[in-house]
Image 1 (cartoon, rainbow, N blue to C red):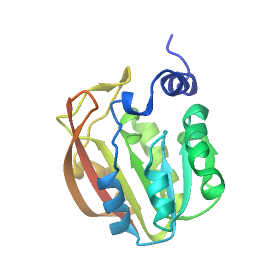
Image 2: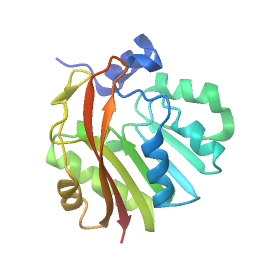
Image 3: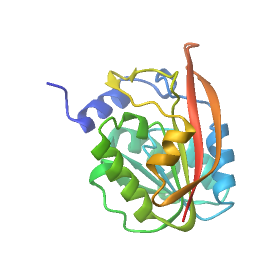
Length: 199
């Protein structure tokens, strides 16, 4: 039997350094650029933030930042760096109820772990609830040629068209691009990025 999701991710963040996970990037260049495209300022929630330094970059740029993650270990690492400069939500995004409205919802590599269509639909509804009209959703997922699994979990891979269709009820695709993310050990992981606008 597989461990509960929070146990799985707490183990990852307790046993691996920040630069020992496949999704590590020293500078979150694409995320930062696309968040700016979605909104030049305002409230940003980073869903599945992990221990990423994106929150640090966004706080320095003047955004009001909330980081959400299922792993208390990951959030503790961010809190150690940022303290009260950010807000923290310890939750599984699928069981979370947004208590605020955000100008940007950012997700780099959570949505591709949702392989069940019902979970995907729940996620879309949550994003639509949390993002105000005219706000942006910045999504980074494994591309069709990307890995079929990550950290021992299966993944769902997407192109811009599949993301546009999944979010079509509440969001319009505004921009898309691809990225070849290079892991700390040199493997190449193709990503699809999309900026979707809340209608």
